[in-house]
View 1 (cartoon, helix red, strand yellow):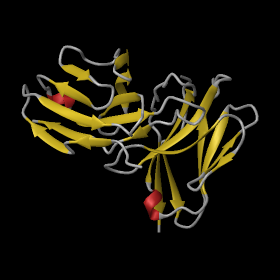
View 2 (view 1 turned 30 degrees about the vertical axis):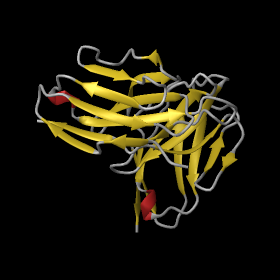
View 3 (view 1 turned 45 degrees about the horizontal axis):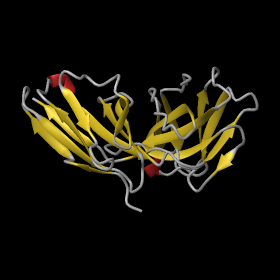
View 4 (view 1 turned 135 degrees about the vertical axis):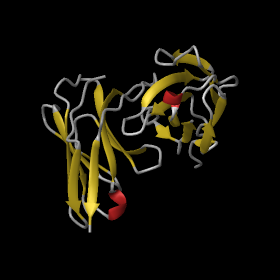
Length: 112
Length: 116
């Protein structure tokens, strides 16, 4: 799986949008971008994934650049409960059950 | 829909003792993963099962770790004998591995192991 680069930490004010960047300059054409988050003492939680089009669900939006070399996860109105480590992972999405390879992630601190 | 279930949630053992962790994946999920997460690091894959067969166990320390998924549903991960450096969270995860939307991996809450 391709390597991703994320800032180690970020702060965000409560109620504001949190924009978490991820670089994946060596991503292959068949690799998707996945985002997970891990709140303290819990298992990783799936947020969203995409291939090349922007995606949105009830948790977040995913913006992937046209060249697919970077992406941004957007939490539109961050709350204190969004404080967590956010992992950006690239992974081939097929029926072979390819594993997730985690990096260090971004520690997001949402402040009142 | 029930999530991935793991037990025990917390375990403290002395070094050289043995411990076993149990995982029940989401119903119908063919693929099951065990990850190890040391404090301050991202999770690292130990072993991956597809139904009851091992797909990847290249990162499993086989001299002390073993895992099985005999009937293709529940799985157990065993450590014997435990070392201090095995102190970590052991995460079980599963995926459907079938169909266009079946590849998302879902994690359990983890089993926290402290070896003293």
